[in-house]
Length: 274
Image (cartoon, rainbow, N blue to C red; front, side, top):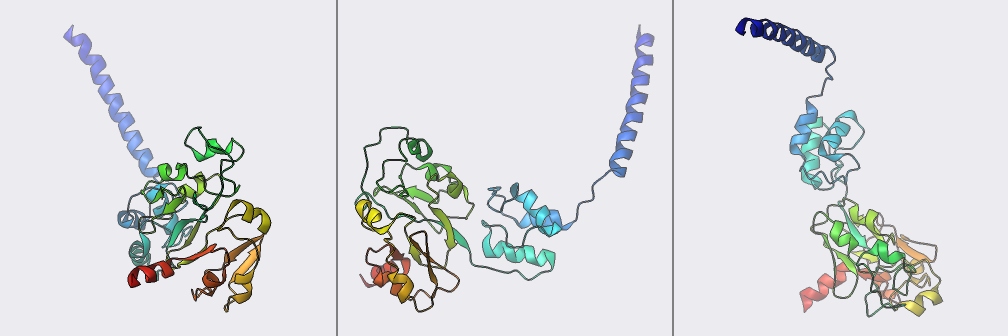
């Protein structure tokens, strides 16, 4: 009985050694050579795997940087410090461009924007869009139902008691998830260092804007005419700041008749003087 078992076990062992040797040889022949810089860069990336860089996680970004398909400062979470470390590994100078953060370009708080009806449905912006585009009188206004808040992996955006979503720039990593989640397309990436913004996304004409919102852009173009740097453009009935040339002189903030242009710098100054 024992002898009958020994023979097949012996041959199974021989076959295992043969196949194992063959696999080992094949893995050597067909091995994909990995640049040693890839694991080094992966080691300095934060490991958030948020996809904000546009690649499938930190592993994908590390490989893309080494392959030349992504810049050394492509990680929005790591910021300047990570970019500097990656640049050192790559033997390059880091182009430390201004960090970007998300901003909800709408100031249609409950007190500023009318409501078409009382919404009792599912507390989800995409679901509410099915109901005539949401309850806000402005078809471009933030509905404040918190879809962006729930999807943010960094707890950087919250719906306030005023009924609109507000981004915390200190926590925001510019991963873009809130931008993709917003059915109104009113969340954009802006330079973190800039404090002056047109907080309106309405493309309606002035009269239609005034009928539903007291702080919307009415297309008067006073800001465009008074900007000394000529960094405010106008298209689709909406003013837009070209951040690259903006000196934040705040003339547009002062001139805007509806206060659609806001300045975080002004708020900081007021807080400091209070």
